[in-house]
Length: 282
Image: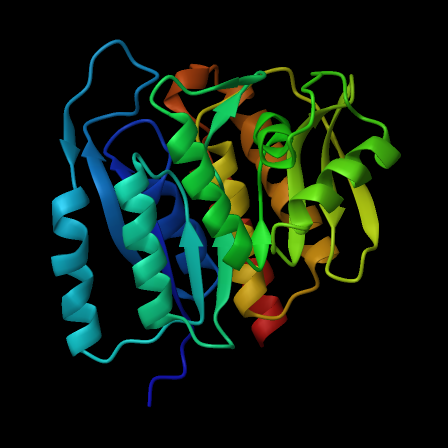
């Protein structure tokens, strides 16, 4: 029997722009874990560009993973990213019911909005459907905007007090998620990630803020969290690893003057991440 761990990643595929599946596949693979991709849509490049090709994959998702079912595949982890509709959320819930057992780690990045606003494509019904995923997630990784939406809490871009973050995370956890990581918190010269774990303890992890916001950093972050989760790495250690890796990748992207919409140049430091995982697993 193959002893290598597997993670199913459910997200869109963007051919250019370094985000979604094109990020998750190499990052999870660097951890020595097989990444099995289930696309929700195919884009020529992400929607941050003025023009793009788009192919909705909703109707193909269940026929696609039904073949996995026939193969008898099982997964140590299921990582869920962008979902474009209520119907896709329902399909993912069916996927989880078929492929997850009590040992499967479910990691959800509830892509809903940013800067205090939901994305234009999201309806109230869609937001409510994403709460269902929060109910079954072992680890939920919303940004501050998404955290406030899930918690029913007034958004303020300056929220950084640990007690206030604790209150928001606790509300989110009450939906069912065992662990919550609120990502990308503005701490002035630093960027923060707030961890609320299943024991009710919390930590605010600090990293240097480089000054540029880039496409795909959330996908890099959640991919490392997923890889660590199936390897039973403590969440605090995992968040520090993910945040440090993103910081290094953003810094080198800035040094090379790569446009922010072109994403983060994680390729230059991927070997370091692979070496770190190799050291842990040897």
